[in-house]
Image (cartoon, rainbow, N blue to C red):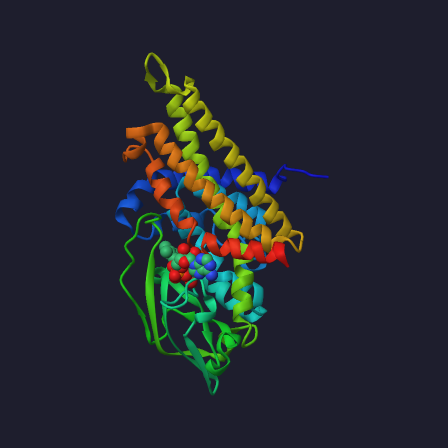
Length: 380
Ligand SMILES: Cc1cc2nc3c(=O)[nH]c(=O)nc-3n(C[C@H](O)[C@H](O)[C@H](O)COP(=O)(O)OP(=O)(O)OC[C@H]3O[C@@H](n4cnc5c(N)ncnc54)[C@H](O)[C@@H]3O)c2cc1C
């Protein structure tokens, strides 16, 4: 049987995050877009209201969300502001390797630290010469006694300047190349870490990125996640879980731009009638609505596939990230077009949504890389 209804827990999640977006995110969205700063007051409020660290199991102080629960929450965050939403959601990316590969002691230590500090974490995979090509990573973490010595240069790292700890991918044996990629937790106070100035960028400005230089940073052996050489697989499995989140954020931004432009079109009078009475505008709105509906169905199906252990989860998570971010770019662009001069102005958030969703086509694997994942799945 196919069932598109949310259960009671998911309905409560939807309501809670929608209410938070109305009260705390939308009123702060323009401010943090202009400040281009990490939205600490909103993130602290999200902690107070129990909205952070959704996928962390309840026994470690999180909410124990399934992937579908988390997607329902992320759509509401995206409908508020993707930049602020990423401030709240990026912990999920950083802590997923810990969730997947960490032992109980590591879970207690690092989830405990995050929740006690009401903090954030950062996921450090990308380097200047390793973007789409993760196997090109050059950072090394060479074993030395009871430690690893980390050297490397990470780029575009979300939350870097705000993070309590970093999840870092580095090679433990450069002679084996990416087969020795391993994942580590590196506390932010470790000597030898240099955080470069914040990246200036087009959208999602409330989310911050920095380059990080690691020079002879000592990592205790007990901070290795899982086994040496399993880093590449942990990085890929992380994206299988988190791409539904990017899809849901995109979907939320598309929905809110669509609703704003539709309400505006019903009230804007030109040539003696609402502009929505013109078929040219009505059909644009109809196509936007269809795309949003399709994107939600695909995102929920991908989340369901992951939650039920389906073999299709890898392919569907790539499909929903690709589709939802592509249609979000189209829908937000059309929302600006429907509202014309008003849409382009700072009086509404649709121009911001259009700038914000562009990044969803780029991070956590570009949409070209998603096509590679999908084609590998369908051709095998
Ligand atoms: C704001 C922001 C936040 C980010 N946050 C993080 C983070 O928190 N942690 C982290 O580790 N990384 C992060 N990233 C990095 C992000 O994941 C990478 O930017 C992304 O994976 C693409 O890498 P690249 O920018 O080096 O592009 P490149 O890999 O250089 O790609 C350039 C172009 O070539 C295309 N391309 C490359 N290879 C192929 C191929 N085989 N076939 C077809 N087309 C191809 C790409 O699709 C793209 O269009 C962030 C990036 C940004 C911009």
